[in-house]
Amino acid sequence: MLPLILRGLTKSYGGARVVDGLDLELEPGRCHGLLGPNGAGKTTTLRLALGLIGADAGSVDLLGYPMPAQAALARRKVGVVPQIDSLDPDFTVRENLLTYGRYFGMKGREIEARIPYLLEFSGLAGKADAPINNLSGGMKRRLTLARALVNDPDLIFLDEPTTGLDPQARHLIWQGLRRLIGQGRTLLLTTHFMDEAERLCDVISVLDQGRVIVRGSPRELIRQHIEPHVVEIFGDGLSEWQTCASTFCRRCETAGETLFCYTDAPEKVVEELENHPGLRYLHRPANLEDVFLKLTGRDLRD
Image 1 (tube, one colour):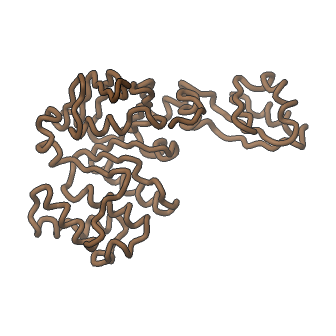
Image 2 (cartoon, one colour; image 1 turned 45 degrees about the vertical axis):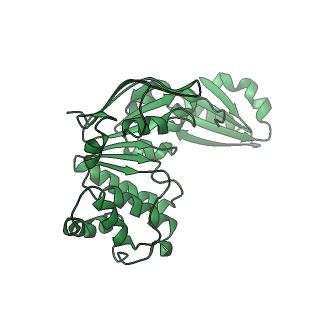
Image 3 (cartoon, one colour; image 1 turned 90 degrees about the vertical axis):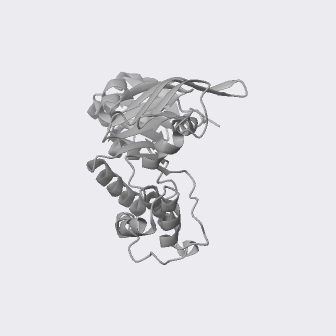
């Protein structure tokens, strides 16, 4: 059984179609990334998948249950990490986990038995009796992830789970998510951090204007949609050098004061740049962010 199946999903608000005939299937035991610019329909898709709102057309099957008709049954084995932490500030860490577990009909002793694992998983061992207001922002975020696992879910929705975290906290959460994937859990991840998606996701769907425009593994998307090397060039004399950039680059893009040179022969570009001491450059392999910007554009979205 597939954990999540979306078929022809459509949702409009005020005459604007936010989700437009969306088809999506999640394979079990894998991390699936749902990427897209602001307004692409990601959050609405998650709300539809969880049965929090109804679709105008199409169908949602969550863990074998039609949504939203049997949302309560389906969500018993689903974990959710929302964008914004919703921890109860009047409770301790342990009390937050106990209270949340009871929403799933779990007994107190059953929840208590899971608490040591959840605290260790989230790097909060020794913080069980700490008041929520005494936790740092990173600790609160990790507790929100631990809380999403209290019911031992088969499918976990992660809506920008590492926003606002420092690098150490992000890496700790990444390690935990990899452990969950290794245990056979299915993850659906939305994130604006392309390196996070590239590290964690087995399959990525890029969403724009309510539709999936491409789907594949990170390596497949990079190989299919972008040149293998990128040279970022900036500094004095850039405008003059741009006139001959096409001689050395397969494709060029300008964003602000930077020229992005996409090429399969970076050594020629770098050799030429060495003759222009006023220019600075960064040579790197192409990545998922390059693909994302090529497919969805560099313009800001509201």
